[in-house]
Amino acid sequence: MFEFQDRTDAGRKLGERLVELRGQDVVVLGLPRGGVPVAFGVAEILGAPLDVIVVRKLGVPFQPEFAMGAIGEGNARLVDPRVVSSTGVNDASLEAVERRERELLESRVVRYRQGRAPADLTGRTALIVDDGIATGSTARVACMVARQRGAARVILAVPVASGRALASLAGPDDVVCLVRAWNFRAVGNYYRDFSPTGDEEVMQLLEAAARPVQPVPADIPTATGWKAIDEDVEIPSTDARLRGNLHVPVPCPAMVVFAHGSGSGRRSPRNRQVAAVLQKAGLGTLLLDLLTPAEEANRENVFDVGLLAARLTAATQWLSTREDTASSLVGYFGASTGAGAALWAAAEPGAQVRAVVSRGGRPDLAGPRLAAVRAPTLLIVGSDDPHVLALNRQALTRLGAPARLEVVRGATHLFEEPGTLTQVAALAAEWFVRYLLPTVNGQASSLVSGA
Image (cartoon, rainbow, N blue to C red; front, side, top):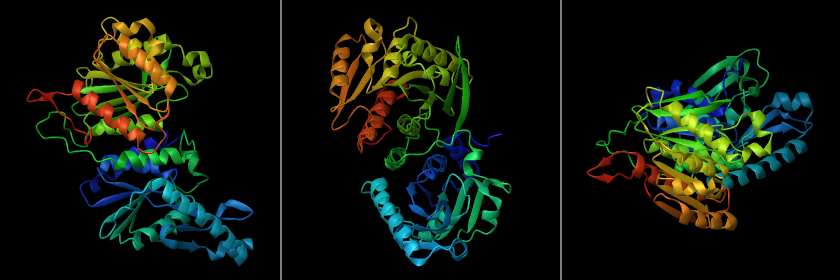
């Protein structure tokens, strides 16, 4: 029995346990790579800033997964002399491992922060988050780094840890752990999905967390603060059950349903980054897999826009059956082939869709149905994605709805370039706020700074 679906689920559950820290002077610090998605969820629930503490394990040369110590930013260093002695590692070998790991550490510090200064921890509470603890070596050195940077209090928080490692752990003032396992084997055994976290996802989550968001004005009824329902859901369609991640603010005036592109799904870090910005603006989100794993194996299904659109329509109808979303206005956010499906579904007679945003989309896949779309549509394309840009320019002239094309300079098809996905999220939030959220004094309110 798995304790957590994935790192997103673990972050949500850990954040709920830590909710008493909300409103305190806390900085959430994820340990890359796998700890950052967990920390992102914690920071969202606490409304706290997110940063990283970059650490590296010092693995025994002939058994790299076995830690003989760890290093961290600011020349923090920890070596376990018992392991060094028992494995026969000499000083020269230890120095070689440390030199190699220090080079990797410094390169990742530059890569992850993208020129941003480290969070100021002076006099504050440092909440260090990882996806799990096996030996505790990297956790201990992370606590050392937080102390060096002036933290007044250090809390270590993890979804799961070895009970033996925690019993001997020194460094934090407090430890919060959801599952203490005495018969511990590996962190991944407690997750249904323990897929590796890449540098790209780390950078995207840090970028999303760093983007300033204006406080939601008190006179807007959608300003619900942090209270929200987050759950994994299964949605019935005519021929499959669709798995999704649902975020519902309380109350919920509007929902944005995500239609993912080929090779992507509800766990897409790009769409999760966009969803986080929309949630901060008071919108509910539904990220779902439009295909089952077996269906994804057949590439023809990925381009079966009619099938994808039918699944999207089923998800929209399912929202209308829930008490908390029955009266919510609905928008679609589509990426790549998913954008074609979103526009196809929006063109259906009686479609209850009030706004559509396409990111690097293939609106041409909706074909002649574009003229039947009535929902205001925003097309976002990278300037360095010439083929898709040409398709979107053609679609702009065929859409029957109010439409706009935004070109993000320097972006390619996947918006992997620094800052480009942040621009997408801001543009999408502005569009959905304008068309889905209530107006104030007759004008749509813009809740996202820079939008």
